[in-house]
Amino acid sequence: MEDQYRQLVKEGVAALTAGKTSLALQHFEEAAELDECPELLSHLGYCLAKEKKDYDRAVSLCKTALADEHWNSVHYLNLGRIQLLAGRKQDAIRTFRDGLLHENNPRLQEELARLGNRKYPVVASLPRDHRLNRVLGKLFTKLKIR
Image (cartoon, rainbow, N blue to C red; front, side, top):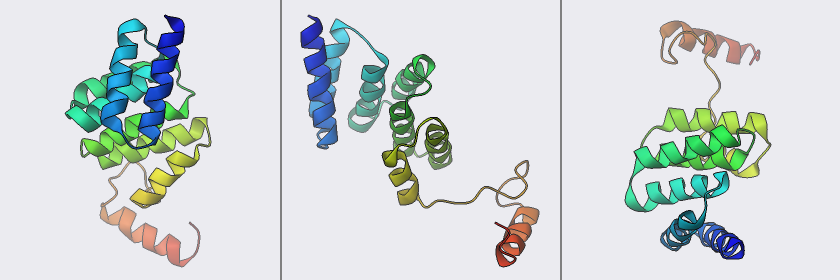
């Protein structure tokens, strides 16, 4: 039974890597009937969001995985991708950056580069589009301070 579980997770990850999320979802759902681990929950969450548009459940599964393994950057990657699918780009960027704080994962860096890496606002307590942030940001950039 343990071997079957591991084989299903392995096949699911391989299908996910190949971009076949519907096949990966089938493998992960079968594996979830046998046992659950944080890696499985995280990948299952992403597949649910991608294939079934069930964003609430997907986010919940990834956050459960993060609660168990907060150091694993793959969970941050999956959660950020779910947030992107749900149209929450700012949350996704924050999640990808949080993942990079725990582990230097090239896939997180690729996602951030694909989204366009923006600098933090000069005055973090104000919104990005606040006049003070825009003016100080332009000034600091000209002075090459940031």
